Length: 83
Image (cartoon, rainbow, N blue to C red):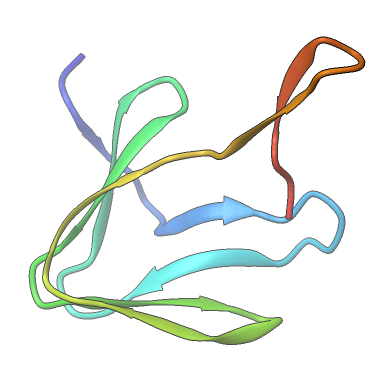
């Protein structure tokens, strides 16, 4: 799949609060490379902002967005960790 530039820079939306992790900065862009697979282009660096914590500073670079999964051994299933 050819990477598709997205019209937003939301890295993850909160399931319960409606808040979102957003990348902000000059030249920042988010690209979809497959369903549920994206990477962040931050040629001059970026900040990841969220309403519930301080910004996280990223140096210039290209970043894969990964969704963390947790495994429930009792239910024998995995699920995405939600915010």
